[in-house]
Image (cartoon, rainbow, N blue to C red; front, side):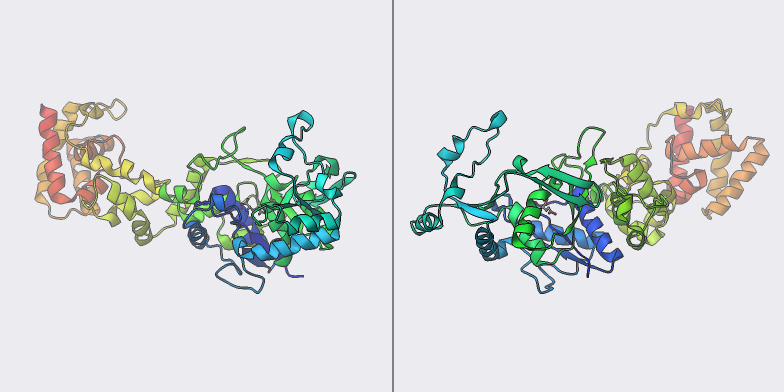
Length: 478
Ligand code: GLU
């Protein structure tokens, strides 16, 4: 039998990393097993509808490199793939379920429902309308009395199933309510639509968040009542912000787009998200999409929540940055260069060479290079450095010797600058550290720079380097 999985997002306008992980696992599981991956839009809750949200879903999948085989834009013969376009189908199946005894019409009004005092204050529907005869139901329908259709859950017994991650799940039937399947506006609830759609779309494996773990027995009762084969279920543990808090959808920093804005690279995001709640048998960490597809196995899914650790995610991202060519880096980093105070002033290729080995996320770029424009008036105490046997007086001496030699050369390549500095060290009897530190500070005024003295001189170019060296000498002399 062909394996078919689906991703069934509600169009809320953003793609939370939890949703993206669910999507990814469904995709990986299908592809690992040569199956099909289906995209279905669950938009029956019209109040939550957000303009453009479906576009966000397509865009995210495309950026992440997740390719659905069927969906609203790719017909595979079991569509429509948008729930709001399937209203008539749900009503038809709900009526069928009524005939089969798995559901019934309910005409109770709000007052009656409000009056149902339940145990512990929880209101539970009392199957009042189940007592109506067929003729009574028909009379009410003919009279246009508003109705909903409810699931008819047996009062006794236990419903169980075997979850692929959590093992056996059992819920006593008396703990489940006769939930609404079709609302008074004729729209299905999620509870009903997901069952009908998963069956009609021939889904073999339902992969989704753990919040549905304990309502799945209800869905299975519907499959049974219809006489349909139940799918297999793989429920996924939550993603946590810390040991006790789930990563909230409202938290505002856990959407795919947020991570892109922060300067994470797409393959790093996908890689990290795949590892949130799953590990390959060899515990490998850096994995491409095709490696993930190859290695994905339900055995590696953990039962407990996993914490989104941004430090770890940044480390992983830095591994991807290191693999970029200068051209690739510049293309991705351009928006972040433009945000920097140095925008347009330096050769981006040269900056790229300096930054690639030193960067965790692209949004750190301005912080790493803004110092280039914060030169004047820097802290002279930086020259006082016991470890390097340095002080301001030595710095003045070194600069007085260096400036004419730098001035005399037109070749500002790193190689030539290294030679000049080597001469200064030799002739003056200085320590290497003294000369390199002095020149680097005199050029940048910064304690930390992405690169040493010669790299900074090369980046700044001769004219600007000379201006800065002279400025620093005067500044040191007070
Ligand atoms: N629309 C549901 C959600 O976004 C789908 C749940 C499922 O995969 O069954 O949570």
